Picture 1 (cartoon, rainbow, N blue to C red):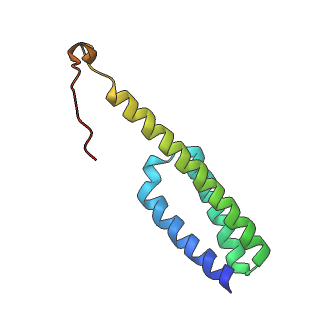
Picture 2: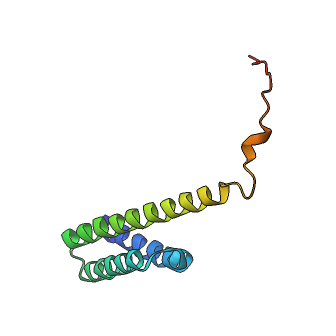
Amino acid sequence: MEKLNEADGMIFQTESQLKELGDKLSDDNKTAIEYALTELRMAHQSQDIPAIQKALDNINAAWKTATESMYAQGEQGQAQEAQPQGEAQGDNVQDVEYEEVK
């Protein structure tokens, strides 16, 4: 019964997150998640506990891959945005003395 509830919760979460993040996912990652979601729905419907566990593992792996990919793209985008435009910003560097307060 616990695995059925876990599967039910994962189905709901995945559907919600696909709606929210769908446009940010690559086609490959989105397809992998949708496939794993279908697999989980079928296992949940048949109440096959070993199949539910396998499907939960698969959907978690698909989400892990997708979020790592999104994170890497975000980091790459931030690094590009951080690049100085025009003149190098390193020309106006000043050393400032500071005192560490304890």
